[in-house]
Length: 208
Image (spheres, rainbow, N blue to C red):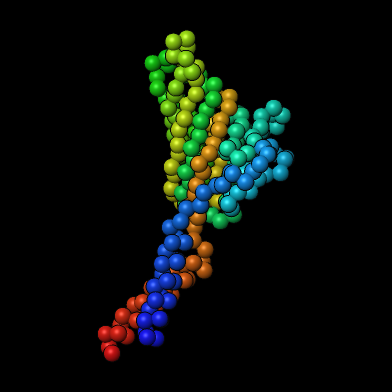
């Protein structure tokens, strides 16, 4: 009976550590009852380990607001995500409102979202995606409408993401944000001990 209890305990450790390694974090905007302007120097908003702020590059007219629906702002600035726990992956859904399409026959805005990734203040990598364009009224103007897209990135460990949106639209929205945090050292230790314990238990069982 004692052997069974020990084995179950080891298995639980491995399962828990494995789940901690695999679980992505989702930003929960639902708890924000009233929209909050996060344009620097206004206080940022922190959700699920991510601190959200916005740099208007001293324009005085650009802004970003975080509310229960997500983030809305002007495309002339940069949306900043700072991660309390470094991450290796980031997923973002976004829209561009009142977008202008240069080619009337086109279906996408190129480079609709570009994200720069940093670690400890040092540039690491970047990713860029297009957005699908939809005209508000194709019969009147096929080049004026909105665009939607999604970015799914994975790469070297980062602690900050800077987002730049296409200037072909004045307004952006962001929602459905998730990221993959790097496991804390304690989680890794738990997983290693669990695996070593299981290995040792199997070896012990064979000898007995």
